[in-house]
Amino acid sequence: MSQDLVWSIIKKNNAFLKSSHGLTLSAEPGNLRNTNSLKYSGLARRTTIDVAAKNGKVVVSSKIVKKAAFPAQSQKTTTFSTVNTRKTARFVKTLATQYAPELRAAALGRLHRVQSALRSAKKAAARKAKKN
Image 1 (cartoon, rainbow, N blue to C red):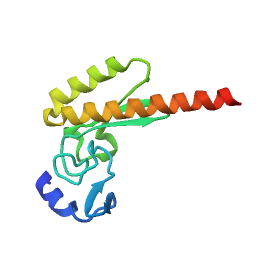
Image 2: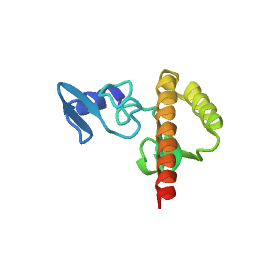
Image 3: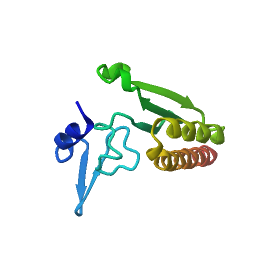
């Protein structure tokens, strides 16, 4: 199916929508800005990039377009530790430039937010351990 047809079906009714104070956000995987729009939709678009934190590490995943008919095999994931942030940023920038250039700024912004959240969680855990 085309991404426009999928978007017209899911734009007003899907399980990931969150509405508050007249603003509609989306919590779907692959949505870099959490906005309910076709450009950032992880469900409707054929090409998506996702940056997330999992077990204290940064996970970068992208859709494989040729495997779209097989959802279990359609994600390619790469895991990075939080030690080398420049290497991770370089990987995300290269992936986004080659794969979905319109998502490059959003992917780098999400990477920065995830890395800073992991850093602050690590500092909080160190402070808590120091108190005990």
